[in-house]
Length: 219
Image 1 (cartoon, rainbow, N blue to C red):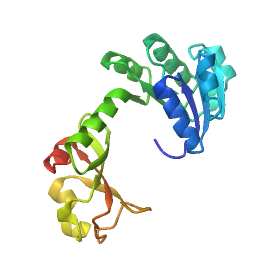
Image 2 (image 1 turned 180 degrees about the horizontal axis):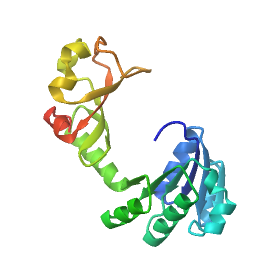
Image 3 (image 1 turned 120 degrees about the vertical axis):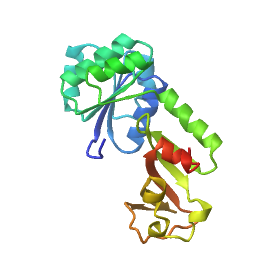
């Protein structure tokens, strides 16, 4: 998903939905939050652009809310699988550019993908993987599973890499991973050049197969 998206609608305001809506709003994006519960709507109304009590599975309601004008829809409906599927189907029919949906299980995930969800996630599972990865590795700072085979990982610079350039280290050929960015204090170097020398305090964002990352003792 690219940064050109700026208008978001979040359907379903459980813990996950509220967290997504609040984070997007704090980052300065336009956020419409929708939930059936008036109590929940009151909780989020202070920090999102608009908060509306409505049925996210009703086409007329979604049309009236102008859902087709949003760049991204986050389907965060929790326990009701049927409602989640219906909401996903409707926002796709309305032409929302990018739809991210939360799934309860693999079968739910398959259905959501089948009806057009651009990305399906298991928030609790992904968070569990992040926490476990942090527990078992001294180097890993953050972890995002891109697929069952590839991950994007934020790591502290390995001791043996300090003082060497990316060219010297030949990380891609030697380890099969790509250095996507380097953070040095408050400065971020995207797509760093080969002559960049690594420092002890540098944070690297690397991408690779889980097999290659594990071989490097990152995962």
